[in-house]
Image (tube, rainbow, N blue to C red; front, side, top):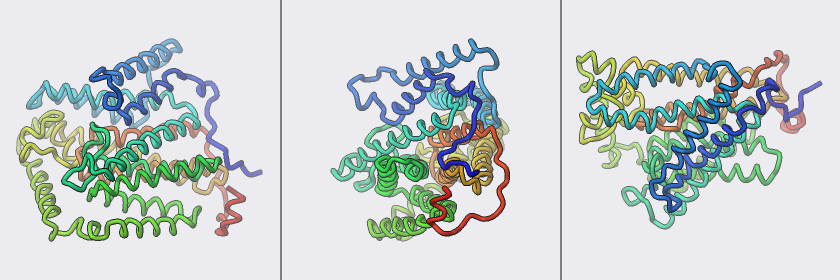
Amino acid sequence: MSVPATSVPAVRSSLVGRYAIAYRGLILFTILLYLRPNELLPIGTFPVVKILTISTLAIYFLDRIGQGGSLSVIPRPFRYLLIMDALAVMSIPMGLDPASSFGAFTDLFLKILLIFLLMINVVTSYQRLRFIIEVTVVSAAIVGAMTLADFVQGKNLVGYYRASGALGGIFENPNDLSLSLNMLIPFAVYLGLTRRNPLMRFMYFVCAIVLGATSVVTYSRAGFLSMALGGTFFIVKISRRYPAAMAVGAVGGLGLLASSPGRVFTMFAGSDATAAESASARWGLIKRSFEVAGMNPFRWLFGVGIDNFHIVSNKELVNHNAYLQVFNEIGLPALCFYVLFLASVVAISARIAKRYRRARGYRQVWLLAVAIQTSLIVYLIGSFFASVAYLWYVYYPAAFAVCLQQLLTERLPAQKGAEPRVWYLRRVQH
């Protein structure tokens, strides 16, 4: 007997309902992370997000201690992240400005570690995982809609024509904004394809369109490249099960060209003075990154300290490359573990997608794994052009991959035979 299309992975029933309060705190943190209450509400600099983070972690740890056992599960990607944090701590006193490095570590990297820890422990069911993905997508789409509204009105523009985030912080830079939204488009499509309610399906497809449109109006070269390559990967992966994906992708590509043909064709051209100047500056930063390390073993081992590269950079610029950012600011060993972390979560999503590709009753699991894999690939491409190693963008999809792996406690038996290629038979089976 075939498994129903709505089947989800089996999980240990004793874990499903645990950490309910901590999970709600995680959801609220995610909403506040995107919607930035200090900018939307008249609360000034009141540290509402920090208070929520500490409170949620305290509730989780008290619950965990009360039930006995270790404080956290420690899958391989989390081990790599722990080692990266340890190396970051070691680099602080070795840095050019230890006070600045300490502030950046506690404000960015430490929070990432703690929220990653929280997510991989409190997301104990497929429903919880899907819900936090829904919250992330909707929150980002709201930011995208606000940004589009500002763009139409000529507000918050960079260089007279590039949209920047309607909210500041991690969305202020157009390149960072574009990368963060591109990474969530596959999840919006996944939700649109798997929700049964037609209204909800429509809403998530609209979210995908809003995220893509907002990324386009940032006029980010890195954003365009990551969207094009990531989108092509995603469409190819799902087209066998969703033949209409090719047509939708073609229409989207034509829409992109029609909306701004001149800009698309000159975006990477050397004849464009802005593009040429930007490319020259990026190449200068790459050379400067290796000059800073030089022959100094301490700089190769510990870097110049988190958020300190601008001190020795060209014109106070950051690396504009996440891998060089880690290398210069924390050191070569940290870069190795950063790459291992990224490779491990990509491998997890790829294995799950391969395992469940022919499992007819587990379409949601397969599609989610493909969405996670695509999101991570988008980051791998976009992070070559942005200093985002200590920002949230990659760590949420990475945590989704770890959570999904932990939920798949039953291995499906191998199924023989190929799926029918006729759309109406596939619809019946899935």
